[in-house]
Length: 85
Length: 430
Image (cartoon, rainbow over all chains, first blue to last red; front, side, top):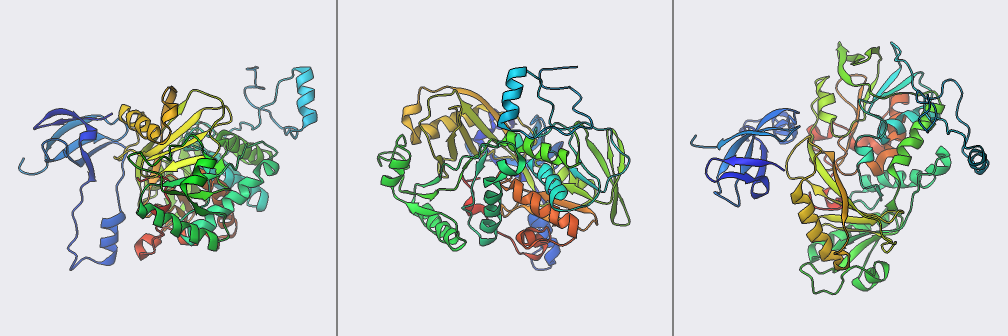
């Protein structure tokens, strides 16, 4: 069970959220090479340790959050708005 | 030192006797200790092949290397114990009713190998081909079932779409009344599918490999892999360094972490998948029943416990702890299928790790680093593919040529856009 401290709603269970995962910058489709595009599509870091990832509070404030989570223990260190913070 | 199961440090030198009815009677009369079935060794400074991961894939690769080929000294290293990872955490379902012709051919070879594995290994793996039903609760899933059935038939596999009346005959306890939230409209029926005892498969392969000279090193964690000039030269472990020209990544749940050691990026995201088991009751469920819409699959073990599996947890994680949300959701979905088991109690739940690839097909074969081979990215299909993966990886290691059966699954397919979309054959939505 993961509890996410939503800055708008307080600590809430993760099943209220949609997991968005690792955030990566999309290359410009007009100029990106095939390799860059494949790397963007499939090249995930998938680390064991602390990650900063996106979660969407779909059954709450409906805001996108940036959450710091440890992928081995599922401990959550912080959650902040993904935009406007 | 005795612990009730042979000498603690394993037998040294002498191979164990072949199991037979005579052997069983002899041990029964004499109350003798059964010898441990694989040896322990000191780590040598050099091997010809090092396989990382002592699960069904690693052990099967070592076994077929030793049986079908001749490559010198083989070591299987694992940071835990034999079959202690995802080979011992899956729900032990075997089937070959996949969606793509490549997938169907590949997994069907695995079913073939499983069918005579007990005889091959002289070890009872309890393969029970009791039939496999994938329920359809919507027109869309019925269409996918019909598609799968046609692909299956073209590849010569016993698989067909059946209606609710036939389903009711096969599984009388299933609610096929049509008065449920998700009525059962039909099912993909795959008679050769079934369940197997996964621990026995791991132990059988370990015993068979050991008897042919493979060294199995438990509690041996790989800390790093040495690469020189684009070639693998050795492996650093917590028990010392091994020099070797070939390292095979046969890990599940750690495909990324091991491949990162040589700088090969795996298109994998690791998700936990939870499962649960009930108290044992009298046998009432023969077939394996799967519902993609309800995210659940159920089978009854020979002991009478119901084994439930579900979809992967909806976030990437290396954690193997269960969650209450899973139990709650699972119970609701199972009761929708079989309301009569409402009084049964869950005994325990557990979790395994699934290395999910973008197309739900595995990643097998060579990588840009010479001597570093992979057999990873199995997602939720790993256990059922153990024997065929071992057989084909062994051929690749020994001959240097990629067998036709696994050529579609090479790592380069992602860069070249040749994905093998197998998501439609997933038991449940992920």
